[in-house]
Length: 130
Image (cartoon, rainbow, N blue to C red; front, side, top):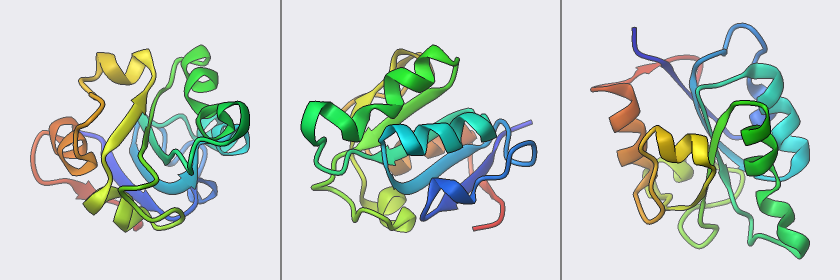
């Protein structure tokens, strides 16, 4: 069974239990607060916006945090997609950063977010609760 695609402007929209195993495309920054919401929902892959990376790489803190909890995560470049707009992340985003678990799923830096999702979904997506 292929995963459900969840396209959410804020990662806080994911529901623990109901969204477990989904591919979560969000407009959220990849900071630690976002990571905690993703951890609660346990998606197959969480996609964030790097939000300009920030001081001490705060905009990417979700990637190693989620790696440590067994969750694949990546972030699109803030120059490729609008922060806070998941549809822009999906349609325009270019992966700039990925943790090792995301790389194991085939996520590569420089790849279009839409291509990542298409590959993971194995065909036209089964979109849930956009």
